Length: 488
Image (cartoon, rainbow, N blue to C red):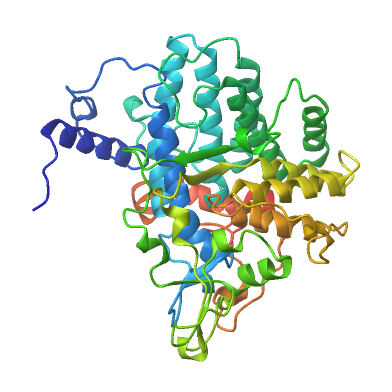
């Protein structure tokens, strides 16, 4: 028998569902009456929604890393997999539906948090709300392209069919918001509305997240406006006191999921993480060439076909043709401990220190800022390895496959591993650079072309048809090959 929820919680869920549905679709009726919840607190502090936003967004993105990014970027794949599937670039029409709905639900909560922070005249919480809003909108627009922003979440103003904003406008807005947030932070002022689960009220680390995120987003759009973006990057990196960024792993935006309710693993059963899955050959083979200490943390060993003998780390190719009988071994899988909390806190990655070092390495390699790309490259590799509890071997960079060779290819291959389990970042960075160079299986769909976006959900196409058509016309189509603004 299913346990019944308390009546008040049922009413809250119904109200939230209605509000979310109306956010991006046409609705009629008495909105004010339906949206009034008598059990809702009339006033909230800016800290009331902070932890739910952090947890729900971070844990959802961790799930999506496994469900989508891992398959698309050849980290792991379904096994057996006779036909179709994301790893073959077979992307369904509603592949991004949960992403759209989840992000907009929490954008509404972020907006409410920001309003409460302004009322409370608390600059630190105002800044954090701006960071979270920029973070979520960057993921949303990088996944879909043009999306509603200016008119989104305005059901109380009876805007139920919001217009879409261009990705250029969204990026301009969120980059400006991050600049504003950096100037709002006041480390001398305590965060008094509870303890946040990401940084335990460390204002300085929140500010580092703000500027590290800004580095990521500036780099992503550098192709569209090179001079302005490069100048902004140089200004930031030349003034670390004004624009502090991550300088070590303990400052990174990595949520530690403890397993203590409500901070629990997004996998209700850890076995579901590895059930009917296998590690991808590309992901495994590179780690083998690196002789990488992360292998036992990330992977299980392959076994002989009878399951009795371990044969080292060995994956299967993404996009393979034919049945699983062609493989005369049981392939490696991802390590189930990655999503368990009884062996230590689970990592839900928002942004890492290693990513910052790889950004600096790329800028130095391109002679935009800095003179020693190798130092930043090696710092990034070391940070990425230590983030997962491994130790960098003394001879790691003596290996021909790991030593810095002066190329962007080498930087981006290691960055690919540094972005492991980091929402859609491997996908976004591949689209930005075309790296790392991924092999193409024999049974790839979409003409073997990497998909570059999600299609808009069918509910948006149906319930916000007029604005949907305008957005699609501007973008040049609603399909998985329509490049977003910063890719063109």
